[in-house]
Length: 445
Image (cartoon, rainbow, N blue to C red; front, side, top):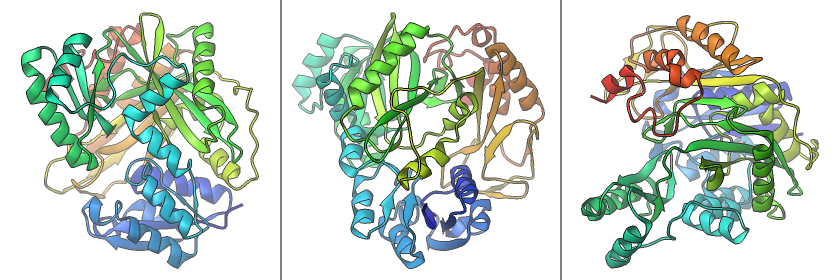
């Protein structure tokens, strides 16, 4: 087992990773920016190194600073969590050159799946259905021809995209040129790459994802599925496991598609394969080669600690059965409490959460809130024997949350849980954007 692991992240996911390491008696090293010097995750770690100023580019995205901290602390491995350097193939290569194990897949797999257009092409080559669209396309005339052939509405998507960035919806030809330029600009700014491709909009679609893990020999195990359909601007708001809208036969079909995609690739570590489900068919959307924000609902229904399993497998001590899916029980729901950040700092004057459900957070009452990083404040995770039982638990849990000092989406989450469409499992990826609840309308006005 590893003796010391550097956590290349911050906030709730850094706390989550540190706790997992503590369970395995692994010492931890935190890296932090100047504004995070008093953060909970810094206090939890055995060692901590300041790696730069407040801007992510000067700290958490600074490959050299993060790696130098690992070298100085003499760590065995680096865990990136999600975001920041989690899907940075160059950083993986740097770790390898310094003899530090990367807790994730090889750099070439990260590069393949991190380029969404390349991932689409790879999936198609393996016989996995993909959403109708193009490969990377740049020529204005070719874009117009391809868009006309695909039909409207369609999406312009950043090839190196993620987190909903670099995506523009086009409803008619007259909007195309302007939206292409906007998508390219946003992609260049967010990912230092302006390449885009076109993809048909699937209406009335549901978003489903499959949690997988690979051992050091590349054997793949499916750990469960999640329904991540409820989104605002392609940012997930509510996640569920298991996805109760699909049948057992459809779940087996998904499992076959995942193995078709990844068997023989040599995938190591945690990953998530995402699909859109439309008109009784699954279409490959993308693959995230890392731990996901919403891994907690999979843990709740599978009975597995996926981070512990990842650490054990990476150290050569764990074992998976490539053909067996864990036994699942009940339904778990996660609600993401996010902050409405502005350009000014704020203070979390009150932060009270229920004690009888799982709450993943990196904050506590009195913490300073800065506008530099992700807006996630906490994840509330509940588990029930049935979906309705889980909804009722979430309603109760959210009613017990007390937050002051900063605006959040708490009221939105409560209204979703009370909404008839949600309770009847009757919604699509566009439902929230179409104004499913009044609170969402007020947030965007």
